[in-house]
Length: 263
Image (tube, rainbow, N blue to C red):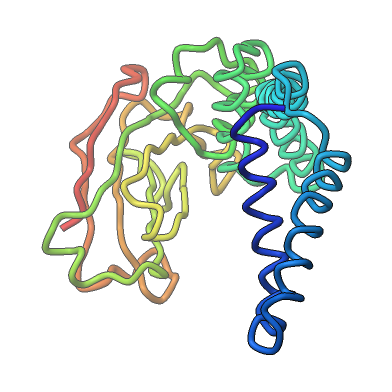
């Protein structure tokens, strides 16, 4: 038995005896001494028999028992993380089967697949996002071949944002219309995208899938003007306090990026 362990036992025994002996001391000192003389060694032996000797072997086993579960927990945690991410991605894919017209979720799915280096699936998901008017500059480098709805190569993409002065006027629930109107074409837009102000700044893409009339789509015209307009009423022709931005004449075949700042 180590000296430290023995001392600890004696201290605990003395404390225990104190609770018994203290009342007796006040009444009969001799009886108290006899009780203490018998109780201290008895408690010490009892505690030793119950707890055993703290040898290095037992301490080592205790340390091993304590350490191994925590190491296992760390291992489980590290193994679980990739699986959890993959599960979330698969869950998102499953939800899109029920709601396939959610362009933002398709874009999120494409980014997730790309992050997991699942390139083919990223291409497919991004193609669906593009068909629904979403755009991502990083994913644009992928070969986007949509299996569900092949789209025309005619497309215009860019970024829409608010000026500092317009931020003080708009509400998050206001609507942003982004549309292309053909030069020497019909009076109505040949491609339209609708989003909430809360989505700004926004990377956008206009293509044939957003035509108001299938006989007057983006690929049918050489040049267009792109407009981004804020509306509180939800009507595209009703610009909130004149808040809008217009591009110059754009050749559709150029396939170039444009920046629009609403002010």
